[in-house]
Length: 362
Image (tube, rainbow, N blue to C red; front, side, top):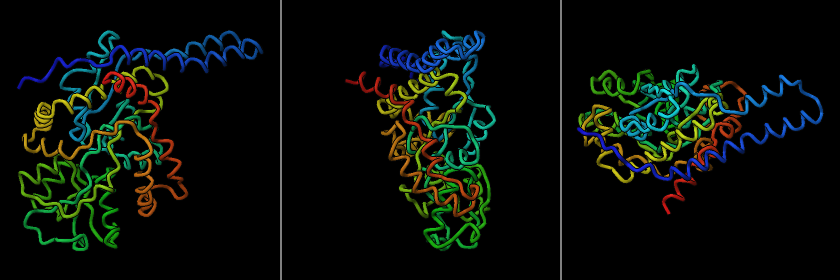
């Protein structure tokens, strides 16, 4: 199939102007400090030169980021080569790394294998609480990953019926944490079931083969299980969804603020393009994930792309979900999760990019 290409790069001029303004603002604290240093003689000349050197963004030879089947924007951007085009003049190489789940993306972020990665919100909170140096800078969507799936002929009818059963879930991901929250609503805990740690696609296979009784699914694999296997959703609760975050490493944010702004500009371009090209998007998702077109269309129908800027709604959802991390002893005793969440969610970095998009649409 020929990929859709040639979309107009909207608000390029405005985005460039905004990015330039951001760079100037970023330099002002350094200039102020340098002025004070000159006045007081508190710095040696070599230190002052080093200060000015740090004020300029370091060159970026390679941009490392993930793509994931649960992030349609990442698939659209990768297919159309938009990031490669954005950074071509800088001779920056773009390295794409496949993430099969939030746990993998967070591992890659923590190790420095990627600079920017796509994860679920609560999974990012858990990772940051345990020392992963990240900030959530953009919402790629609110995907469907808050459901427990059983086979079509399963005798299990309620959450209470899961007691003593095997549930496939990928530890460190929102579906895993959703499972724990769902069990609590039925008066059950992790000790009342056997959680089998499998990556998302393997969980679907285990369910279909009868190796587990239920599976904490996510799209597109969950949509495929429903359409291709006849699987049914035992329990679904969209209110437990903690959104899909685009996270960046703290050192990348510090050293390459301009590059991050340009990545967010491309993500925003993809978000707008998806709304205008639903059929083309479905084809890309189907081909990239190697699933059928009906599966891709079901997945997209359950994605909310309307809130790209992290903010109060996401913070509220995370703070409502955070107690499960304490209840299940997934974080160190005494961890202030509200403080962790406030430090994680940073909507300011996307604000200029979104403002440029909105102005361009007028």
